[in-house]
Image 1 (tube, rainbow, N blue to C red):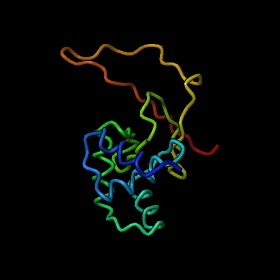
Image 2: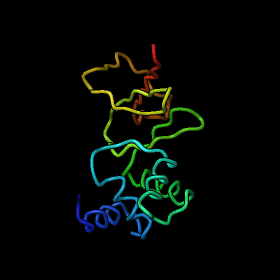
Image 3: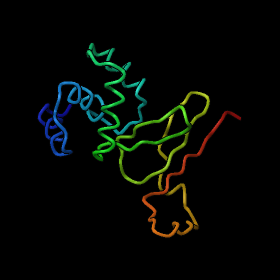
Length: 135
């Protein structure tokens, strides 16, 4: 497990104030492997760790971390967003049956042609979500 000071520094470097809730959620998000979370799943995890944090605070913190570049938001439909601790460019499988998201290895996908952006616009990123179901 990373030291407490690591999470404190990470939040400060992102230009955010290191509140008790941000520090606690940062430890859950960035304390191990890269992962995909929803606000609800992170809130449940925080509750399981006896952290006193509201679902609204979890939503706000996830969006603040995303805006600061600490997380990447993956929108799979109008009702569900995931937050990815791996902010590098990569694509995902979305398992419709259980709502899980999984990274796709870069060697497994290629994009042959990307259209030009409309005039006055630039392409920021290309996100592919491959939806899978049981056969």
